[in-house]
Image 1 (cartoon, rainbow, N blue to C red):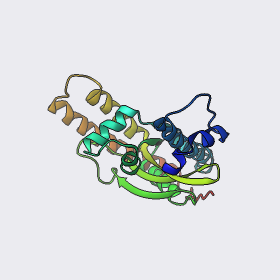
Image 2: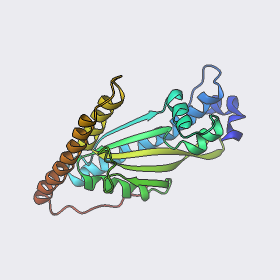
Image 3: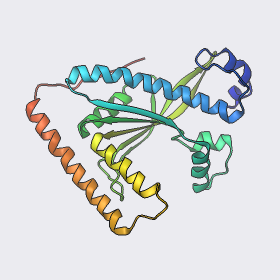
Image 4: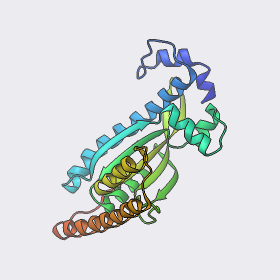
Length: 230
């Protein structure tokens, strides 16, 4: 990463996918590289969304969103981890600077997507956390995968970390609502309301399972597929 940043003007001005009209500082250049990695993953799964939906005859992937962490969020996370705030530590220690969220219908779809990620030749899985089988204390449930994505900058290829979160639509609803009520307001959430959110997460998990059982009853002839891309 450092060798690339020392040639920032040459690289960025000659890269067709990143058009530069002004001088960028070092942080902005790093973020542009993360954005390029993010764009490649979003494009890949947008294409896979169509293939999966056609094969299974329903929306396996219902939504794909992405984001780059803000400078304040990155610095805050590094301070919380007691890591000195500099670019080298940021690149090595913060795995979710670039993030993609894939939302699907059923828990079984989550694992379909995880297996597809594992079969991609151009993606390397670095770390996985299954918060579906081992739900967080708060009730949060999802599947997290940290991957490395190759990014070409002129004649060089570098590998950038991207976090992929895979959730069902019900898990996504719970997580989004929990974040809004727990972290956005100035007033601290009471212990009783925190417990209620945990119970609601349990209920959502039961609904997920029961909805899939109904779907499976009606669709017993669909086989899984293996998808590989370059």
